[in-house]
Amino acid sequence: MPSTLRLLTLLPLCVAVHAAAQTLPEPAEVPAPLPPGPRVERIQHEDALARIDELRVGGQTRSIDVQPKNGAPAYQIAPAGSGSSPADSAGQRTGVAGKSSWRVLSF
Image 1 (cartoon, helix red, strand yellow):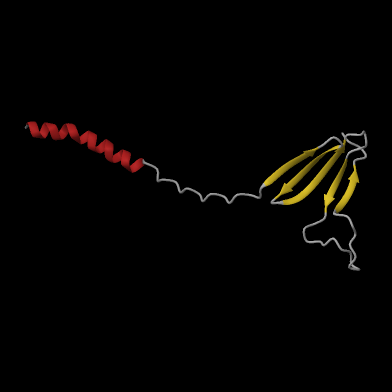
Image 2: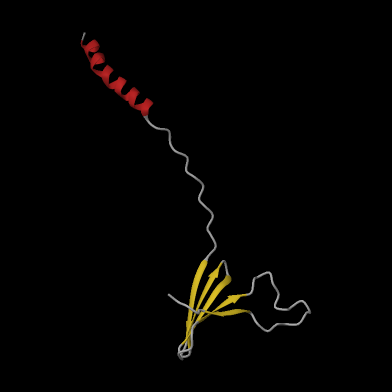
């Protein structure tokens, strides 16, 4: 009889363990890591005459901001596209690496 009593006391424990094992969630799949995006660099050059801020994305220059220190207005240089050549349609070099623009209104 004592063995039957031991069995009866262990029965609720076994049922509880079995029920808990049935309700455990399945392990979630770990998503693959995303590939790294292009490297973004913000480069600042400064000397006695001007401060130049350059933005590079993936190694290509996207914008150049120039702030002269002599009181002249700031301007931007839009670099020529990476697919374009520095020569015009006649085969002659134009002599500019990008197009300058001045900010008329700044807020």
